[in-house]
Amino acid sequence: MQVAPGEVVGLIGPSGSGKSTLLKCLGAVIDPSAGRMTLGREVIYEDGGRVRDLRALRRDRIGFVFQAPYLIPFLDVIDNVALPAMLAGMPNGKARARARELLGALDVLHRAGAMPSQLSGGEQQRVAIARGLVNRPPVILADEPTAPLDSERALAVIGILETMAREHATAIIVVTHDEKIIPTFGRLYQIRDGVTHEQRRQPA
Amino acid sequence: MISLAGRDILHAWGKFAFTGIGLGLLIGVTLTMAGVYRGMVDDGKALLDQSGADLWVVQQDTLGPYAEPSSLPDDAWRSLRLVDGVAAAANVTYLTMQVRHGERDVRALVVGIAPGGPGTPGWPPNLVAGRHLTRSHYEAVADLASGLRLGDRIEIRRQRYTVVGLTRRMVSSGGDPMIHIALKDAQEAQFLKDNDAILANRRRIAADPALSRPGVPGLSAAVEAALASSHQVNAALVRLRAGADPIGVAAAIERWLRLGVHTRTAMEDILVGKLIATSARQIGMFLAILALVSAAIVAFIIYTLTMDKLREIAVLKLIGTRNRTIAAMIVQQAVALGLIGFVVGKITATWAAPLFPKYVLLVPADAVTGLFAVLTISVLASGVAIRMALAVDPAEAIGG
Image (cartoon, rainbow over all chains, first blue to last red; front, side, top):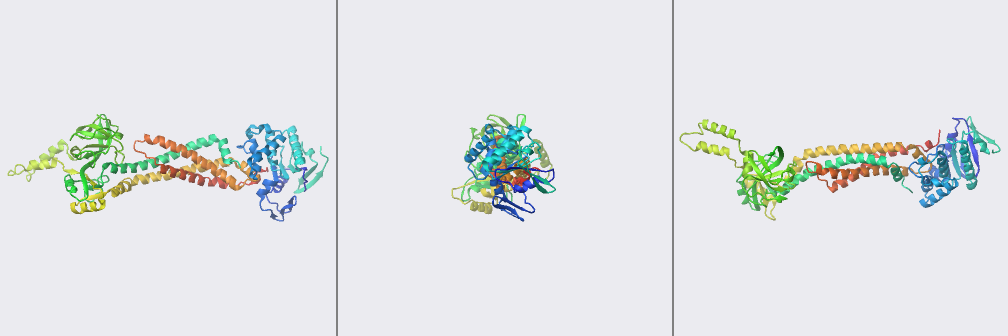
């Protein structure tokens, strides 16, 4: 399985097929039992060996967007987005400026001072996407990002991810069950019996 | 980096405030209990300070006059004044009893003081109202804690007394207010028998052939008089000359007058180390239990607050938050809870202390010790929650 910078690929498969497990391996959360994983030229896993600081790898080079937004309930929108940048050592002011920029691009800047509980589901998901992008990671892993959304909003979210991938040369892998967004992917990986099968298609 | 703990506290301030108030009331009780103990010690020291004595001369082999009964002849003070180093000596009696005032009783330590004036050992050094005793009978100087006022009439045994002066902080080691009366009155109150007992004694003497001899007409009257009058006091208070060695003077009195003598240091040891030792241990047990309960409450609250945030903690770990940042967040919340509790507790104790019937002394040093204890307990109590938070797998943030 290979994903190029600026590309958005889909990852589908029946329940229990191992989509989430694969996503956890790709996200440097759990170790794969075998195989090789590289990010750019850097080898992340190979034959039981791995990079030492997975936490820093996740923080600096991988962005996550979850099925539910999982925003930190006690931080306002701007700080939810800026937090990963602050954790990476960026000064607060600069992190917030970058968060504002992303919120503007995702059309939720007007809710920057709101608390997560005050946002609609779609707004929360856009804020979560902004959080995943704030460190400008080369890879974003999205776990069912459109599950709680209606068709219109789901397609809008995929559109945002595609724009972000193009503009920031980010490789994005979207795990999904969502039939309405599957046609939007140019490349799709399907997991069947523990094996990934690639399908190339013309995006809708 | 922003303060995650601070933001969480601001977000859930109601939960923190109410928990902090509950914890604060517990801490308030703890501080007050410490104040009760301090008050008992201070009462004991005040009793010694206000007596104006450097040495307490008592019956041999007793720890009197406060811890044990003591009785010595009321002319012993004359010999004491001749001992080298003694500036003044005066008799004193102490009797804890119910003093009647109108329809109510006042628990008080009735002190009999020898004739003299302010400065005589045993006399109250300062009055807040009224005057000292000037008549030889039936006047009293009472402490404010007794609730008595100038001009009040009180009843001690068979006699009525008028309150002519008021003192402050003149109490027994048990916190009972002192009422000073003339020594003769106090001796009567303590030693004089009631009329029926005197009559019974007369009959017994008259019936005793050894005491009613026809050839010795004044014998029975002399025996009656000896039995009816009292020449005993509980102690003699001695003030030393400047520069006199208390231990040397005490040794001289013990050797030549064959009386028991306690120095100021020894008397403090008796009062603090013996008289209130059991109460102190009791209060110490309470303090230990309250500290454990406080720790359990902080631990439980922080544990439940952390339980509510497991998903957020998984997300924080997934996006690269260090374990020490998460641990610091939990510790800061526990410390904040402890601080809120301490502030509420200190205010509660300060407000409640004057309402207690006995003296409650809140010492700043106890407050500082209490603050450090609360902070230490808070940090230790957050250990369970930190352990749980650090065990959270970042993978839990990813579905499935």
